[in-house]
Length: 382
Ligand code: PRE
Ligand code: MN
Image 1 (cartoon, rainbow, N blue to C red):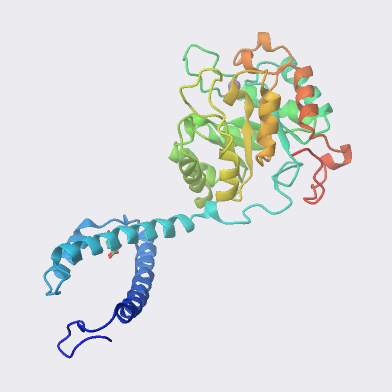
Image 2 (tube, rainbow, N blue to C red; image 1 turned 135 degrees about the vertical axis):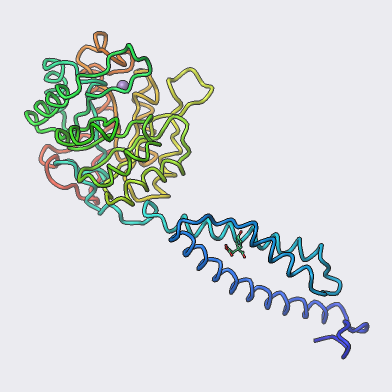
């Protein structure tokens, strides 16, 4: 080192030598910071296991006081404060990343290459899937007409229909409840279609689970942690919709509730978020699709009807969703939308639904509808 015996930097040392000293000291500091980060990560894991917060201002203050009281030459208490506050802040970031990476929802391979099976339908297995049917289950004839039409289409399809409807207005149609569940199940079975319907609360969960193949958590319930925990213990796949104003991080954490309570069979659904825009019912956040696909290995679908609230742009937006990597499309379909008891303005009639499937280019050979879809032969336009 270019120092005198007393510890002062040699007056005569040239810039090159001094900088070589700095380089060596930087390396040493970095080694120490690396070692410190390893301890920080170990603390993060411990704290997480104990349910403790990462940030500990008291501990930071204690360390600062101890460090600043030491004689340290040109590097006085102020400078020590600046450097160590930065170290603490950065360590908190390291801790947050450790916690994030430990989430189940971020694990790769949550769903195998064959996809997540709901009845005969593989979601996320390489072929886009349709989630179609009326907003609400209304009566036998309505369900029969729509299910017969959906079953006639050469595309893997789940039959949707609400029996418990969470309506904004308490005077609006609230759904047929158990009678609706029975109808959905009966019609679905008759036409060989797996069914998906919304569950509103823990109280009605056992009833809803008894009748359908997949349970939907609606946007209003994405934050209902008691419901999410209960769904973790149900042996059925879950369709989890993003809340109107939820960040993607919040959606992933809601999925984590289900996964961490024992149920890995979760499909995420982008369904539009609230913005200032009035041309659509909500704003379809198309970037949510590739972002969710990067952040998680769970399948992702897009609900066009509730995102858009209009029929005329369903096809281009559906194409965009598939191009962005969506594993499926949800759309509301009704044989007579003008007479629908809810969301009539956005439901597609049967010819419009056929045109949508055609336009998306996702029809598959009939034989492939009931077999597991090979990921190598993608029979659809992306
Ligand atoms: C550490 C990190 C963040 C806390 O706010 C306090 C201290 C640190 O970097 O020293 C480590 C830590 O999490 C802890 O000691 O509890
Ligand atoms: Mn609806």
